[in-house]
Every structure is written in structure tokens, then in C-alpha cells.
Amino acid sequence: MDVSRETARALAQYCELVRKWNPRINLVAAGSLLEFEERHLRDSLQLVDLSAKTNTNWVDLGSGGGLPGLVVAISRPDLEVKLIESDRRKAEFLRTVCRELGLKNCAIVAQRIEAVDRLDVANISARALAALPLLMSYVSRHLAEDGTAWLMKGRNWHAEVEEARKTWRFDLISHPSLTDENAAILEIRRIEHV
Image 1: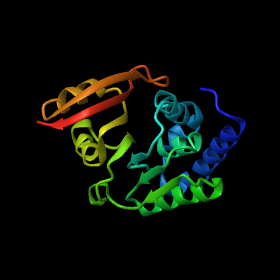
Image 2: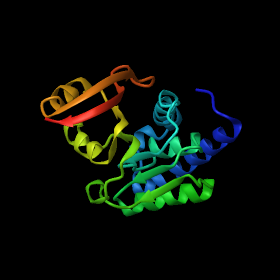
Image 3: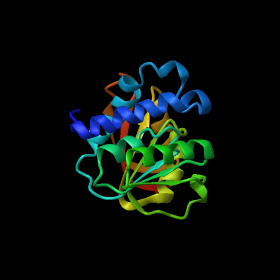
């Protein structure tokens, strides 16, 4: 996952801001803060690589500390990225990062996902937000008909897919995580409620 010198500098600045803010608002689990670059950042950069061919708008649901949405915005200044986060303190953190890094391609929406007007976007991402059956309802609300969802799921992803297929039809490609052999990034298209 090669990035330009400018992108690497911006990502390092983002990591510093996470470490500075985390004790106050718990952006990531305190125990994982020491391995932030290896665990969280690398995971999000993998998503950036997988979605490299996309060249249009992007929405990150439940952005929290900015994973993966801020990493996408930093790494892909050509994309218009919107981060949806209902927690006002976390939304303020996201705004601070955007301001300090000069991210002109990133907007913060401080609302609940279900309260946001339909966005009809080409790409949606989410990490550690909700179990897949519930997450599919959020994604289907905002994803364009020909869009792609990029969902970062942990070690229970197989069971979550099986459960989601009881009420949703969708095309799925699973990409193994580089940071956890049991986790995956789910590339999902053509979502239909059954």
C-alpha cells in the first residue's frame, strides 16, 4: 500500500490527532491505540486499494473516529467524501481533522443515518457499525442502484452474511483482511429487500 509523501504526512497527522483526542472521547479502543497504524490505518488503506477504480462520490456511515472514511478522504482527494456521525463530539473531531489537514473533499453530517435524506451515492463504507442485517437497511437507503457497499466486518462475518441473506438479496465478493485472518472487507452490490 504505497502512498505519496504528502498522503503519508497527512495520515501521520491524522494518527496524532486520534491519539490526542482519544482519551477524551474514545474514538478507538484504548488497547488498540498503540497499534493504530498497523491495525486500524492499514485496514482502511486496504479498502482504499480495493476501491481504487471508483471515481465518484463516497459516504462513510457511522464514521466515529474516521475509519475508514477519513482515510479514504485523505488518500483519495479526487473523491467527494461525506462522513455521517451522529455523536456530536466525534463529529467535532472529524471537523477538526478536516480543518487541520485542509481536506476540501470531505464534509461531515452530524445526524443519525436514518434521519439523513436519501443520498443516492456510488460508494458506501462502514466499519464496526452494526450487524450486517441492520447495516443492509442503512446501506440500501443511501446507495445508488448501481453502487457498491464496502463493509469492513470482523470474525463473525460469515454468520452475519448468512443472517442477512434471510431478508436481503445481494451480490458479494469477500476480500480477506490483511490485519486479521478471520475478518473481511465485503464488496456488496445489487441489494434488494426480500
